[in-house]
Image (cartoon, rainbow over all chains, first blue to last red; front, side, top):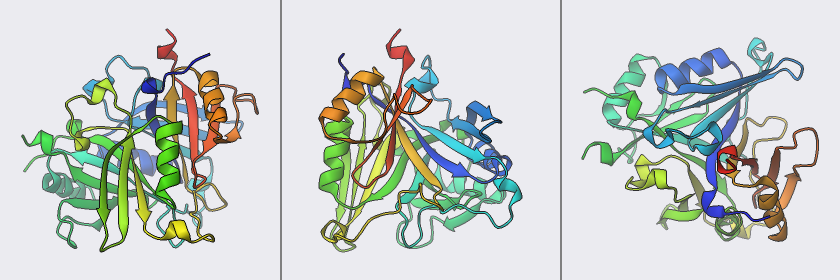
Length: 153
Length: 153
């Protein structure tokens, strides 16, 4: 058996979410991702939602051949426990940081997210780094917003 | 100002690492990623390493136009503190889960990782899910190994 590392791909990132209704609304309506696949296991009481962008680079690729997928894992019932929340990684002992979304126009994208009621952690004008923004997803996971200069060319 | 969500992309995932020497060895030698970019800030005492696969889908794209990048953040000095470790997300309060790498041949890829001394959390033959494996990166972050069936066709 042989393996060719040049064929390896970074397929997805997974984190756990408390409430899929809130998260799917955020990732689809606010961030513009599509639900590419989902899997529900009622015995083991969990659901998986695979979300991401439909980009030309992924045309003809099966889900496992793609890059840039976000897997949201929902353990059934957490959405009904008011006291339940996940450690989103950025506290005292946090290791996990954020995902980053690139957009065509940073300020227009932030205006749109603002109008949708998305919570900002850092607006472009806050602090020294004017070229980035951070918003929070419904669990509080950080999502960085960055402008892709190639789309401005 | 307008913004076109169909142009948005999931560019990268970031987590913090204790020791870049160990992590870069793991992500390049073991997982076959390339260092696509790096940024060192000696005043603020941190370094960023952007790693990922050179795939045909990314040809001609600037870094911010791509998907599937992993950003490793190193706060200088953590590598010299024996007691220091990051919460990798899968403990009692963990929200963050893992990244997943797709490979051409699961068993050949796992054999290769084994020979490189990579630590396995779950081998393909462990448990019920024979089609996946989990390895640990140097900080203990979980990396899922999945086979892309399209590469077998």
